[in-house]
Length: 80
Image (tube, rainbow, N blue to C red):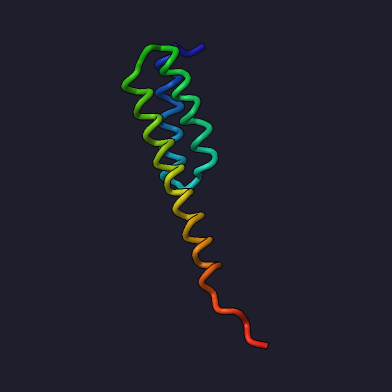
């Protein structure tokens, strides 16, 4: 088994790569795993890096949802 900080590092790097590739849901899984591993290893600075990446993804998802919702509300009704 990998040491906790090494496992956290692997999960963090994979999560960041998936985030960059636009695979947000999968990235969140690995970033949350990184948080858990770094927390168990006592690496609070790395926990914060993983948390920051998670928050960036969630913010982007919320902005996309808000934009999609705004787009559906501002469409003109179809004429009969």
